[in-house]
Amino acid sequence: MDGEPVDARWGSARVRGRRLRLRTLRVYAFPAAGLLLAGCASMPDSGEIRAVQASQGVDSQVRVFGVPPADKATPAEIVDGFLEAMTSDDPQLETARKYLTPAAAKSWKPGSAVTVLSSGLSRVAVRGEKDPEGPRWKVTGKKLATVDEHSAYQPQTGVGDYEEQLQLVQDEDKQWRISTPPSGLVLSESDFQRIYMPVNKYYFAGGTLVADPVYVRQRTDPDSRMDPTTQTVQSLLAGPSRWLAPVVESSFPTGTELRTGTKSLSYDGQNTLRVPLNDKVGNVAQPQCKKMAAQLLYTVKDLTGSRLDQVELLRSSDDKTSSLCSVTSVSADAIANRPKIPDFQYFVDNDKRLVRMKLDVSSDDQQTHTEPVPGPLATLPLFRVSSAAVSHDERRAAVVSEDGHGLYVVSMSGGGPMPAQVPIGRGGKAETLTAPSWDVSGDLWVADRDPQHPGLWRVPGGTGTPERVQVAGLDGRRIASLKVSADGARIALLLEEDANSKMLYIGRVERPDAKGDVSAVSVRELRPAAPQMANVTTMSWAPRGRLLVVGREKGGVQQARYMLADGSMVAASLPGATGLSEVAVAAAEDESKPKPVVAFSEDGIVWLPPGAQWRTVVAGGGSPVYPG
Image (cartoon, rainbow, N blue to C red; front, side):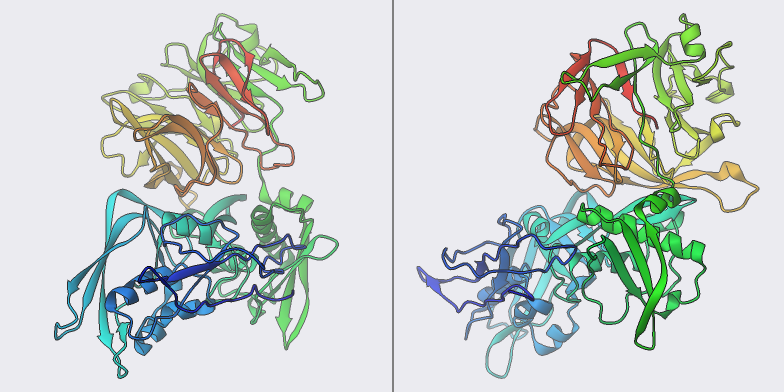
Protein backbone atom coordinates (compact mmCIF):
# COMPACT_ATOMS: atom_id res chain seq x y z
CA MET A 1 0.00 0.00 0.00
CA ASP A 2 1.53 3.31 -1.06
CA GLY A 3 1.57 6.52 0.95
CA GLU A 4 1.55 7.25 4.67
CA PRO A 5 0.96 4.49 7.24
CA VAL A 6 -2.67 4.00 8.18
CA ASP A 7 -3.96 6.46 10.79
CA ALA A 8 -6.46 4.73 13.07
CA ARG A 9 -8.27 6.53 15.87
CA TRP A 10 -10.04 4.27 18.25
CA GLY A 11 -13.19 5.28 20.05
CA SER A 12 -13.24 5.68 23.80
CA ALA A 13 -13.46 2.54 25.87
CA ARG A 14 -13.83 1.83 29.53
CA VAL A 15 -11.93 -0.82 31.43
CA ARG A 16 -13.20 -1.42 34.97
CA GLY A 17 -14.69 2.05 35.10
CA ARG A 18 -11.59 3.85 33.75
CA ARG A 19 -11.25 5.33 30.27
CA LEU A 20 -8.60 3.72 28.11
CA ARG A 21 -6.89 6.98 27.13
CA LEU A 22 -4.21 5.88 24.69
CA ARG A 23 -4.03 3.01 22.23
CA THR A 24 -1.37 1.73 19.95
CA LEU A 25 -1.86 0.49 16.45
CA ARG A 26 0.93 -1.90 15.56
CA VAL A 27 1.86 -0.85 12.04
CA TYR A 28 5.15 -2.54 11.20
CA ALA A 29 7.55 -0.92 8.75
CA PHE A 30 8.97 -3.12 5.98
CA PRO A 31 12.30 -2.41 4.22
CA ALA A 32 11.90 0.09 1.40
CA ALA A 33 14.24 0.86 -1.48
CA GLY A 34 16.54 3.82 -1.09
CA LEU A 35 15.78 6.46 1.48
CA LEU A 36 12.00 6.50 1.22
CA LEU A 37 11.50 5.68 4.86
CA ALA A 38 7.78 6.34 4.93
CA GLY A 39 7.35 3.46 2.48
CA CYS A 40 4.51 0.99 2.73
CA ALA A 41 2.56 -0.08 5.77
CA SER A 42 0.03 -2.79 6.52
CA MET A 43 -2.93 -2.94 8.88
CA PRO A 44 -2.57 -6.05 11.02
CA ASP A 45 -5.63 -8.31 10.97
CA SER A 46 -5.09 -9.72 14.43
CA GLY A 47 -3.76 -8.65 17.80
CA GLU A 48 -5.08 -6.74 20.75
CA ILE A 49 -5.68 -3.15 21.75
CA ARG A 50 -3.84 -2.40 24.96
CA ALA A 51 -3.23 0.57 27.20
CA VAL A 52 0.24 2.10 26.96
CA GLN A 53 1.46 4.48 29.63
CA ALA A 54 3.44 7.45 28.36
CA SER A 55 6.56 6.31 30.20
CA GLN A 56 6.33 2.69 29.09
CA GLY A 57 8.88 1.36 26.61
CA VAL A 58 7.40 0.76 23.16
CA ASP A 59 8.98 -0.94 20.18
CA SER A 60 10.14 1.59 17.58
CA GLN A 61 8.06 -0.17 14.90
CA VAL A 62 4.80 0.49 16.77
CA ARG A 63 2.76 3.52 15.69
CA VAL A 64 1.10 5.24 18.64
CA PHE A 65 -2.09 7.27 18.24
CA GLY A 66 -4.03 9.09 20.92
CA VAL A 67 -7.79 9.47 21.14
CA PRO A 68 -9.63 12.80 21.33
CA PRO A 69 -11.14 13.87 24.64
CA ALA A 70 -14.36 12.19 25.62
CA ASP A 71 -17.53 14.19 26.03
CA LYS A 72 -17.70 15.84 29.46
CA ALA A 73 -14.24 14.54 30.36
CA THR A 74 -13.00 15.62 33.78
CA PRO A 75 -10.00 17.95 34.16
CA ALA A 76 -7.88 14.99 35.28
CA GLU A 77 -8.81 13.05 32.13
CA ILE A 78 -8.03 16.07 29.97
CA VAL A 79 -4.56 16.45 31.51
CA ASP A 80 -3.79 12.73 31.24
CA GLY A 81 -5.10 12.53 27.69
CA PHE A 82 -3.01 15.50 26.56
CA LEU A 83 0.22 14.23 28.15
CA GLU A 84 -0.23 10.87 26.45
CA ALA A 85 -1.30 12.35 23.11
CA MET A 86 2.02 14.27 22.99
CA THR A 87 3.70 10.89 22.41
CA SER A 88 1.55 10.05 19.38
CA ASP A 89 2.37 9.99 15.67
CA ASP A 90 -0.67 12.01 14.59
CA PRO A 91 -0.01 14.44 11.72
CA GLN A 92 0.41 17.94 13.20
CA LEU A 93 -0.26 16.27 16.59
CA GLU A 94 -3.93 16.87 15.85
CA THR A 95 -5.21 14.74 18.72
CA ALA A 96 -3.06 16.53 21.31
CA ARG A 97 -4.33 19.89 20.05
CA LYS A 98 -7.93 18.78 20.65
CA TYR A 99 -7.22 18.92 24.39
CA LEU A 100 -6.33 22.62 24.09
CA THR A 101 -8.41 25.74 23.70
CA PRO A 102 -8.59 26.99 20.08
CA ALA A 103 -6.15 29.83 20.87
CA ALA A 104 -3.69 27.52 22.63
CA ALA A 105 -3.93 24.91 19.84
CA LYS A 106 -3.08 27.58 17.28
CA SER A 107 -0.09 29.02 19.17
CA TRP A 108 1.37 25.75 20.52
CA LYS A 109 4.71 24.92 18.85
CA PRO A 110 5.62 21.35 19.87
CA GLY A 111 8.59 21.32 17.46
CA SER A 112 10.33 24.23 19.19
CA ALA A 113 11.94 22.07 21.88
CA VAL A 114 11.72 18.70 23.61
CA THR A 115 12.14 18.08 27.33
CA VAL A 116 13.30 14.52 28.11
CA LEU A 117 12.46 13.10 31.53
CA SER A 118 14.15 10.13 33.17
CA SER A 119 10.71 8.62 33.82
CA GLY A 120 7.10 9.63 33.35
CA LEU A 121 5.30 12.75 34.54
CA SER A 122 3.49 13.09 37.84
CA ARG A 123 0.50 15.40 38.02
CA VAL A 124 -1.43 16.87 40.94
CA ALA A 125 -4.35 19.31 41.15
CA VAL A 126 -3.40 22.75 42.46
CA ARG A 127 -6.88 24.27 42.23
CA GLY A 128 -10.25 22.55 42.02
CA GLU A 129 -13.07 22.85 39.48
CA LYS A 130 -14.99 25.28 41.69
CA ASP A 131 -12.13 27.74 41.91
CA PRO A 132 -13.22 30.96 40.16
CA GLU A 133 -10.07 30.94 38.07
CA GLY A 134 -10.65 27.33 37.02
CA PRO A 135 -8.70 24.15 37.82
CA ARG A 136 -4.92 24.19 37.54
CA TRP A 137 -2.73 21.10 37.46
CA LYS A 138 0.97 20.87 38.26
CA VAL A 139 2.97 18.30 36.30
CA THR A 140 6.45 17.36 37.50
CA GLY A 141 9.31 15.02 36.64
CA LYS A 142 13.08 14.56 36.68
CA LYS A 143 14.71 16.29 33.73
CA LEU A 144 17.27 14.20 31.85
CA ALA A 145 17.95 16.44 28.85
CA THR A 146 16.49 18.93 26.40
CA VAL A 147 16.52 19.01 22.61
CA ASP A 148 16.59 22.61 21.35
CA GLU A 149 15.18 24.18 18.18
CA HIS A 150 18.36 23.15 16.33
CA SER A 151 17.64 19.48 17.25
CA ALA A 152 20.74 19.39 19.50
CA TYR A 153 20.65 17.17 22.60
CA GLN A 154 21.74 18.84 25.84
CA PRO A 155 22.04 16.60 28.91
CA GLN A 156 20.98 17.97 32.25
CA THR A 157 23.89 18.62 34.61
CA GLY A 158 23.13 17.42 38.11
CA VAL A 159 19.61 16.70 39.33
CA GLY A 160 17.07 18.65 37.31
CA ASP A 161 13.44 19.08 38.32
CA TYR A 162 10.79 19.73 35.69
CA GLU A 163 7.62 21.56 36.66
CA GLU A 164 4.81 22.98 34.51
CA GLN A 165 1.43 24.49 35.37
CA LEU A 166 -1.51 23.60 33.11
CA GLN A 167 -4.50 25.93 33.37
CA LEU A 168 -7.89 24.52 32.37
CA VAL A 169 -10.95 26.49 31.29
CA GLN A 170 -14.45 25.57 30.12
CA ASP A 171 -15.61 26.41 26.61
CA GLU A 172 -19.13 27.41 25.64
CA ASP A 173 -20.15 23.73 25.55
CA LYS A 174 -18.92 23.26 29.13
CA GLN A 175 -16.01 21.11 27.96
CA TRP A 176 -12.73 21.42 29.87
CA ARG A 177 -9.69 22.39 27.78
CA ILE A 178 -6.08 23.40 28.55
CA SER A 179 -5.26 27.04 27.90
CA THR A 180 -1.57 27.01 28.93
CA PRO A 181 0.22 23.98 27.40
CA PRO A 182 3.99 23.40 27.73
CA SER A 183 6.09 25.40 25.27
CA GLY A 184 7.27 22.19 23.53
CA LEU A 185 7.01 18.42 23.83
CA VAL A 186 7.57 16.69 27.18
CA LEU A 187 8.55 13.02 26.82
CA SER A 188 9.81 10.23 29.02
CA GLU A 189 13.17 8.75 28.04
CA SER A 190 11.54 5.61 26.62
CA ASP A 191 9.11 7.64 24.51
CA PHE A 192 11.94 9.88 23.31
CA GLN A 193 13.96 6.85 22.21
CA ARG A 194 10.92 5.44 20.42
CA ILE A 195 10.11 8.67 18.59
CA TYR A 196 13.56 10.15 17.88
CA MET A 197 16.88 8.85 16.58
CA PRO A 198 20.40 10.30 16.65
CA VAL A 199 22.00 11.36 13.38
CA ASN A 200 25.19 13.21 12.44
CA LYS A 201 25.34 16.19 10.18
CA TYR A 202 28.77 17.35 8.99
CA TYR A 203 30.50 20.74 8.85
CA PHE A 204 34.03 21.89 8.14
CA ALA A 205 36.63 22.82 10.75
CA GLY A 206 39.48 24.09 8.62
CA GLY A 207 39.68 21.48 5.88
CA THR A 208 38.25 18.59 7.89
CA LEU A 209 34.64 17.44 8.26
CA VAL A 210 33.32 17.32 11.83
CA ALA A 211 30.28 15.33 13.01
CA ASP A 212 27.55 17.41 14.70
CA PRO A 213 25.06 15.05 16.42
CA VAL A 214 21.36 15.94 16.42
CA TYR A 215 18.04 14.11 16.84
CA VAL A 216 15.27 13.76 14.24
CA ARG A 217 11.98 11.89 14.17
CA GLN A 218 12.33 8.21 13.31
CA ARG A 219 9.31 8.48 11.06
CA THR A 220 7.55 11.31 9.25
CA ASP A 221 7.66 14.52 11.28
CA PRO A 222 4.11 15.51 12.37
CA ASP A 223 4.71 19.20 11.63
CA SER A 224 6.76 19.30 8.43
CA ARG A 225 5.58 15.92 7.02
CA MET A 226 9.21 15.26 6.03
CA ASP A 227 10.74 11.79 6.18
CA PRO A 228 13.83 11.29 8.41
CA THR A 229 16.32 11.82 5.59
CA THR A 230 14.72 15.08 4.54
CA GLN A 231 14.52 16.24 8.17
CA THR A 232 18.25 15.61 8.51
CA VAL A 233 19.13 17.44 5.29
CA GLN A 234 16.95 20.35 6.38
CA SER A 235 18.79 20.47 9.71
CA LEU A 236 22.14 20.40 7.89
CA LEU A 237 21.12 23.37 5.73
CA ALA A 238 19.93 25.30 8.82
CA GLY A 239 23.49 25.28 10.19
CA PRO A 240 25.43 23.71 13.06
CA SER A 241 24.30 23.40 16.65
CA ARG A 242 24.98 26.34 18.97
CA TRP A 243 27.74 24.50 20.83
CA LEU A 244 29.74 23.57 17.72
CA ALA A 245 28.99 26.69 15.65
CA PRO A 246 31.96 28.80 16.91
CA VAL A 247 34.52 26.33 15.49
CA VAL A 248 32.93 25.03 12.27
CA GLU A 249 31.44 26.48 9.12
CA SER A 250 29.02 25.36 6.46
CA SER A 251 29.74 25.60 2.74
CA PHE A 252 26.07 26.35 2.04
CA PRO A 253 25.24 30.04 1.52
CA THR A 254 23.09 31.65 4.18
CA GLY A 255 19.42 31.07 3.44
CA THR A 256 19.92 27.82 1.53
CA GLU A 257 16.88 25.56 1.87
CA LEU A 258 15.33 22.61 0.14
CA ARG A 259 13.14 23.45 -2.80
CA THR A 260 9.65 24.38 -1.59
CA GLY A 261 7.45 21.34 -1.22
CA THR A 262 10.24 18.77 -0.82
CA LYS A 263 9.03 16.18 1.68
CA SER A 264 11.13 13.14 0.79
CA LEU A 265 14.48 12.33 -0.78
CA SER A 266 15.51 9.08 -2.44
CA TYR A 267 18.35 7.80 -4.54
CA ASP A 268 18.09 6.07 -7.88
CA GLY A 269 19.27 2.72 -9.19
CA GLN A 270 22.81 4.09 -9.57
CA ASN A 271 22.90 4.97 -5.84
CA THR A 272 22.81 8.69 -6.59
CA LEU A 273 20.96 11.06 -4.27
CA ARG A 274 19.60 14.18 -5.96
CA VAL A 275 18.85 17.15 -3.71
CA PRO A 276 16.87 20.14 -5.06
CA LEU A 277 17.86 23.45 -3.44
CA ASN A 278 16.47 26.97 -3.64
CA ASP A 279 17.94 29.87 -5.62
CA LYS A 280 20.48 30.80 -2.90
CA VAL A 281 22.95 28.33 -4.45
CA GLY A 282 22.47 29.42 -8.05
CA ASN A 283 25.83 31.19 -8.42
CA VAL A 284 28.21 29.22 -6.19
CA ALA A 285 31.56 28.21 -7.69
CA GLN A 286 32.29 24.54 -8.35
CA PRO A 287 34.83 24.08 -5.50
CA GLN A 288 32.32 25.42 -2.97
CA CYS A 289 29.53 23.37 -4.51
CA LYS A 290 31.54 20.18 -4.20
CA LYS A 291 32.20 20.93 -0.53
CA MET A 292 28.45 21.37 -0.09
CA ALA A 293 27.84 18.03 -1.79
CA ALA A 294 30.49 16.36 0.41
CA GLN A 295 28.70 17.61 3.54
CA LEU A 296 25.46 16.15 2.22
CA LEU A 297 26.99 12.82 1.21
CA TYR A 298 28.60 12.27 4.61
CA THR A 299 25.41 13.31 6.42
CA VAL A 300 23.06 11.05 4.45
CA LYS A 301 25.51 8.14 4.30
CA ASP A 302 25.90 8.31 8.08
CA LEU A 303 22.12 8.36 8.49
CA THR A 304 21.17 5.42 6.32
CA GLY A 305 24.07 3.03 6.71
CA SER A 306 23.36 1.88 3.16
CA ARG A 307 25.42 2.32 0.03
CA LEU A 308 25.47 5.83 -1.41
CA ASP A 309 27.86 6.37 -4.30
CA GLN A 310 27.09 9.93 -5.36
CA VAL A 311 25.25 13.12 -4.40
CA GLU A 312 24.04 15.58 -7.03
CA LEU A 313 22.86 19.07 -6.10
CA LEU A 314 20.09 20.61 -8.21
CA ARG A 315 19.41 24.33 -8.60
CA SER A 316 15.81 25.49 -8.75
CA SER A 317 14.63 28.38 -10.94
CA ASP A 318 11.25 29.14 -12.49
CA ASP A 319 9.89 25.71 -11.51
CA LYS A 320 12.78 24.01 -13.29
CA THR A 321 15.78 22.15 -11.95
CA SER A 322 19.24 21.66 -13.39
CA SER A 323 22.43 20.08 -12.11
CA LEU A 324 24.65 22.32 -10.02
CA CYS A 325 27.43 19.82 -9.21
CA SER A 326 27.99 16.30 -7.93
CA VAL A 327 30.54 14.34 -5.91
CA THR A 328 31.21 10.63 -5.61
CA SER A 329 32.03 8.92 -2.34
CA VAL A 330 35.68 8.75 -3.40
CA SER A 331 35.97 12.46 -4.19
CA ALA A 332 34.02 13.34 -1.02
CA ASP A 333 36.56 11.40 1.06
CA ALA A 334 39.35 13.53 -0.43
CA ILE A 335 37.43 16.75 0.31
CA ALA A 336 36.58 15.64 3.85
CA ASN A 337 40.23 15.07 4.85
CA ARG A 338 39.30 12.20 7.15
CA PRO A 339 42.01 10.14 8.89
CA LYS A 340 43.28 7.19 6.90
CA ILE A 341 42.64 3.64 8.00
CA PRO A 342 45.47 2.82 10.44
CA ASP A 343 47.97 0.17 9.49
CA PHE A 344 48.86 -0.89 13.04
CA GLN A 345 47.78 -0.92 16.64
CA TYR A 346 50.37 0.17 19.21
CA PHE A 347 51.08 -0.53 22.88
CA VAL A 348 53.85 -0.47 25.48
CA ASP A 349 55.21 -3.96 26.14
CA ASN A 350 56.54 -5.49 29.37
CA ASP A 351 60.02 -4.12 28.62
CA LYS A 352 58.59 -0.58 28.41
CA ARG A 353 59.17 -0.34 24.66
CA LEU A 354 56.68 1.07 22.19
CA VAL A 355 55.72 -1.76 19.84
CA ARG A 356 53.15 -2.28 17.11
CA MET A 357 51.07 -5.19 15.95
CA LYS A 358 48.94 -6.09 12.98
CA LEU A 359 46.02 -8.48 12.79
CA ASP A 360 46.45 -11.19 10.17
CA VAL A 361 42.86 -11.23 8.92
CA SER A 362 43.69 -13.95 6.40
CA SER A 363 44.49 -16.40 9.17
CA ASP A 364 41.74 -18.52 10.70
CA ASP A 365 43.20 -18.14 14.16
CA GLN A 366 43.87 -14.41 13.63
CA GLN A 367 47.59 -14.49 14.38
CA THR A 368 49.34 -11.31 15.47
CA HIS A 369 52.86 -10.18 14.81
CA THR A 370 54.45 -7.76 17.27
CA GLU A 371 57.55 -5.67 16.52
CA PRO A 372 59.28 -2.57 17.94
CA VAL A 373 58.37 0.63 16.14
CA PRO A 374 61.14 1.66 13.72
CA GLY A 375 63.41 4.63 14.38
CA PRO A 376 65.38 5.71 17.48
CA LEU A 377 62.97 3.97 19.85
CA ALA A 378 64.07 0.63 18.36
CA THR A 379 67.80 1.41 18.24
CA LEU A 380 67.91 2.80 21.80
CA PRO A 381 66.42 -0.03 23.85
CA LEU A 382 67.42 1.51 27.18
CA PHE A 383 64.87 4.30 26.76
CA ARG A 384 61.75 3.18 28.62
CA VAL A 385 58.24 4.41 27.84
CA SER A 386 55.19 4.80 30.09
CA SER A 387 52.66 5.97 27.48
CA ALA A 388 52.61 7.04 23.85
CA ALA A 389 50.61 8.46 20.95
CA VAL A 390 51.22 7.92 17.24
CA SER A 391 50.47 10.59 14.64
CA HIS A 392 47.67 9.90 12.16
CA ASP A 393 50.15 9.45 9.30
CA GLU A 394 52.05 6.94 11.50
CA ARG A 395 55.36 8.72 10.90
CA ARG A 396 55.97 10.08 14.41
CA ALA A 397 55.45 8.93 17.97
CA ALA A 398 55.06 11.11 21.03
CA VAL A 399 56.27 9.17 24.09
CA VAL A 400 56.30 9.91 27.80
CA SER A 401 59.29 8.63 29.74
CA GLU A 402 58.86 5.89 32.32
CA ASP A 403 58.98 8.37 35.22
CA GLY A 404 56.22 10.45 33.63
CA HIS A 405 58.27 13.66 33.56
CA GLY A 406 59.57 13.81 29.98
CA LEU A 407 57.82 14.14 26.61
CA TYR A 408 59.65 13.27 23.37
CA VAL A 409 58.53 13.46 19.73
CA VAL A 410 60.38 10.74 17.81
CA SER A 411 60.49 9.87 14.12
CA MET A 412 59.43 6.33 13.26
CA SER A 413 61.98 5.99 10.47
CA GLY A 414 65.76 6.02 10.29
CA GLY A 415 67.99 5.97 13.34
CA GLY A 416 70.07 8.47 15.27
CA PRO A 417 69.87 9.74 18.84
CA MET A 418 66.75 10.57 20.82
CA PRO A 419 65.55 14.13 20.23
CA ALA A 420 65.57 16.72 22.97
CA GLN A 421 62.84 16.63 25.57
CA VAL A 422 59.82 18.84 24.80
CA PRO A 423 59.74 21.57 27.50
CA ILE A 424 56.33 21.03 29.09
CA GLY A 425 55.32 22.41 32.48
CA ARG A 426 56.48 25.17 34.77
CA GLY A 427 60.07 26.07 33.92
CA GLY A 428 60.01 23.46 31.16
CA LYS A 429 59.70 20.63 33.67
CA ALA A 430 56.55 18.56 34.14
CA GLU A 431 55.48 16.75 37.27
CA THR A 432 53.50 13.84 35.79
CA LEU A 433 52.26 13.87 32.22
CA THR A 434 49.15 12.26 30.83
CA ALA A 435 49.34 10.12 27.73
CA PRO A 436 49.63 12.53 24.75
CA SER A 437 47.25 12.79 21.79
CA TRP A 438 47.52 13.97 18.15
CA ASP A 439 44.94 15.68 15.94
CA VAL A 440 44.88 15.27 12.16
CA SER A 441 46.63 18.63 11.57
CA GLY A 442 49.69 17.34 13.44
CA ASP A 443 49.23 19.27 16.69
CA LEU A 444 50.19 17.38 19.84
CA TRP A 445 48.25 17.66 23.12
CA VAL A 446 49.23 16.62 26.66
CA ALA A 447 48.33 17.61 30.23
CA ASP A 448 50.62 18.20 33.19
CA ARG A 449 49.15 16.76 36.38
CA ASP A 450 51.39 18.81 38.69
CA PRO A 451 49.22 19.24 41.84
CA GLN A 452 50.43 22.82 42.24
CA HIS A 453 50.40 23.91 38.61
CA PRO A 454 48.22 21.58 36.51
CA GLY A 455 47.60 22.53 32.92
CA LEU A 456 46.77 21.55 29.35
CA TRP A 457 49.51 22.00 26.73
CA ARG A 458 49.59 22.04 22.94
CA VAL A 459 52.68 21.55 20.76
CA PRO A 460 51.93 23.10 17.32
CA GLY A 461 52.84 20.71 14.54
CA GLY A 462 54.49 18.45 17.10
CA THR A 463 57.71 20.49 16.84
CA GLY A 464 56.72 24.06 17.78
CA THR A 465 57.08 25.85 21.08
CA PRO A 466 54.66 24.33 23.64
CA GLU A 467 51.74 26.59 24.52
CA ARG A 468 49.64 26.44 27.65
CA VAL A 469 45.96 26.16 26.70
CA GLN A 470 43.32 27.93 28.76
CA VAL A 471 40.46 25.61 29.72
CA ALA A 472 37.30 27.41 30.83
CA GLY A 473 35.23 25.66 33.49
CA LEU A 474 37.85 23.44 35.14
CA ASP A 475 36.91 24.88 38.54
CA GLY A 476 40.06 23.54 40.20
CA ARG A 477 39.71 20.00 38.84
CA ARG A 478 42.76 18.28 37.38
CA ILE A 479 42.92 16.58 33.99
CA ALA A 480 43.47 12.85 34.57
CA SER A 481 43.65 11.97 30.87
CA LEU A 482 42.71 13.44 27.50
CA LYS A 483 42.01 12.54 23.89
CA VAL A 484 41.68 15.14 21.17
CA SER A 485 39.31 14.35 18.31
CA ALA A 486 40.98 13.65 14.98
CA ASP A 487 39.39 16.79 13.49
CA GLY A 488 40.94 18.95 16.21
CA ALA A 489 37.66 20.73 16.95
CA ARG A 490 36.90 18.91 20.22
CA ILE A 491 38.82 17.42 23.10
CA ALA A 492 37.69 14.77 25.59
CA LEU A 493 38.92 15.47 29.12
CA LEU A 494 38.68 13.02 32.02
CA LEU A 495 38.52 15.25 35.10
CA GLU A 496 39.15 14.22 38.71
CA GLU A 497 36.01 15.17 40.61
CA ASP A 498 37.43 13.74 43.85
CA ALA A 499 39.74 10.95 44.98
CA ASN A 500 37.28 8.26 43.92
CA SER A 501 35.51 9.72 40.92
CA LYS A 502 36.42 10.86 37.43
CA MET A 503 33.92 12.40 35.02
CA LEU A 504 34.17 12.81 31.26
CA TYR A 505 33.70 16.18 29.56
CA ILE A 506 33.95 17.41 25.99
CA GLY A 507 35.41 20.84 25.30
CA ARG A 508 35.29 22.92 22.13
CA VAL A 509 38.77 23.81 20.80
CA GLU A 510 38.72 27.43 19.68
CA ARG A 511 41.53 28.65 17.43
CA PRO A 512 42.02 32.35 16.61
CA ASP A 513 41.09 33.53 13.14
CA ALA A 514 43.92 36.07 13.06
CA LYS A 515 47.29 34.90 11.76
CA GLY A 516 49.29 36.73 14.40
CA ASP A 517 48.39 35.48 17.88
CA VAL A 518 48.57 31.70 17.47
CA SER A 519 48.96 31.24 21.22
CA ALA A 520 45.32 32.06 21.91
CA VAL A 521 44.03 28.51 21.33
CA SER A 522 41.58 27.72 24.14
CA VAL A 523 39.06 25.11 25.24
CA ARG A 524 35.56 26.40 25.94
CA GLU A 525 32.15 25.24 27.15
CA LEU A 526 32.92 21.94 28.81
CA ARG A 527 29.87 19.71 28.77
CA PRO A 528 29.30 16.27 30.28
CA ALA A 529 29.90 13.48 27.78
CA ALA A 530 28.79 10.56 29.96
CA PRO A 531 26.35 11.99 32.53
CA GLN A 532 24.91 8.53 33.21
CA MET A 533 28.27 7.35 34.57
CA ALA A 534 29.11 7.89 38.24
CA ASN A 535 32.79 7.19 37.54
CA VAL A 536 34.65 6.90 34.23
CA THR A 537 37.78 4.76 33.99
CA THR A 538 38.95 5.40 30.44
CA MET A 539 37.69 6.57 27.05
CA SER A 540 38.60 6.84 23.38
CA TRP A 541 37.23 8.57 20.31
CA ALA A 542 35.49 6.21 17.88
CA PRO A 543 34.27 6.59 14.27
CA ARG A 544 31.39 8.93 13.40
CA GLY A 545 31.98 11.38 16.24
CA ARG A 546 31.34 8.85 19.01
CA LEU A 547 33.19 8.01 22.20
CA LEU A 548 33.78 4.58 23.70
CA VAL A 549 33.50 5.11 27.45
CA VAL A 550 34.39 2.61 30.18
CA GLY A 551 32.91 3.30 33.60
CA ARG A 552 30.25 2.57 36.16
CA GLU A 553 26.75 3.86 36.57
CA LYS A 554 25.71 4.60 40.15
CA GLY A 555 25.38 1.27 41.95
CA GLY A 556 26.24 -0.66 38.78
CA VAL A 557 29.09 -2.74 37.43
CA GLN A 558 31.78 -1.60 35.02
CA GLN A 559 30.64 -1.40 31.41
CA ALA A 560 31.79 -0.02 28.08
CA ARG A 561 29.32 2.03 26.07
CA TYR A 562 29.37 4.06 22.89
CA MET A 563 28.26 7.62 23.53
CA LEU A 564 27.62 10.51 21.20
CA ALA A 565 29.72 13.59 21.89
CA ASP A 566 26.56 15.35 23.10
CA GLY A 567 26.35 12.99 26.09
CA SER A 568 23.54 10.76 24.82
CA MET A 569 23.92 7.00 24.74
CA VAL A 570 23.70 5.40 21.30
CA ALA A 571 24.27 1.69 21.83
CA ALA A 572 24.14 -1.10 24.39
CA SER A 573 27.23 -1.89 26.40
CA LEU A 574 30.01 -4.00 24.90
CA PRO A 575 30.21 -7.56 26.23
CA GLY A 576 32.64 -8.47 28.99
CA ALA A 577 33.83 -4.98 29.89
CA THR A 578 34.66 -5.84 33.51
CA GLY A 579 38.38 -5.52 34.16
CA LEU A 580 39.21 -3.13 31.32
CA SER A 581 41.44 -0.28 32.47
CA GLU A 582 42.49 1.20 29.13
CA VAL A 583 40.71 1.18 25.79
CA ALA A 584 41.30 2.43 22.25
CA VAL A 585 39.16 2.52 19.13
CA ALA A 586 40.34 3.15 15.58
CA ALA A 587 39.48 6.67 14.44
CA ALA A 588 39.20 5.64 10.77
CA GLU A 589 35.83 6.59 9.28
CA ASP A 590 35.60 3.76 6.75
CA GLU A 591 33.39 1.31 8.64
CA SER A 592 33.39 -1.05 5.68
CA LYS A 593 36.85 -2.05 6.98
CA PRO A 594 36.31 -2.01 10.74
CA LYS A 595 39.17 -2.44 13.18
CA PRO A 596 38.86 -4.28 16.48
CA VAL A 597 38.54 -2.47 19.77
CA VAL A 598 41.90 -2.85 21.49
CA ALA A 599 42.12 -2.63 25.28
CA PHE A 600 44.22 -3.48 28.32
CA SER A 601 42.85 -5.79 30.98
CA GLU A 602 44.18 -8.03 33.72
CA ASP A 603 44.90 -10.62 30.98
CA GLY A 604 47.05 -8.22 28.95
CA ILE A 605 46.28 -6.66 25.57
CA VAL A 606 42.87 -7.83 24.35
CA TRP A 607 40.91 -7.36 21.13
CA LEU A 608 37.21 -7.25 20.41
CA PRO A 609 36.89 -7.93 16.66
CA PRO A 610 33.58 -6.89 15.02
CA GLY A 611 30.89 -9.45 15.73
CA ALA A 612 33.12 -11.57 17.98
CA GLN A 613 34.13 -11.91 21.62
CA TRP A 614 37.12 -10.52 23.50
CA ARG A 615 40.35 -12.46 23.06
CA THR A 616 43.80 -12.00 24.51
CA VAL A 617 46.42 -11.22 21.86
CA VAL A 618 49.44 -10.32 24.02
CA ALA A 619 50.10 -11.26 27.64
CA GLY A 620 51.15 -8.22 29.64
CA GLY A 621 51.89 -4.78 28.27
CA GLY A 622 49.75 -1.66 28.54
CA SER A 623 48.78 1.73 27.08
CA PRO A 624 47.14 0.41 23.86
CA VAL A 625 46.50 3.08 21.22
CA TYR A 626 45.54 3.58 17.61
CA PRO A 627 47.01 6.56 15.72
CA GLY A 628 45.67 9.82 17.12
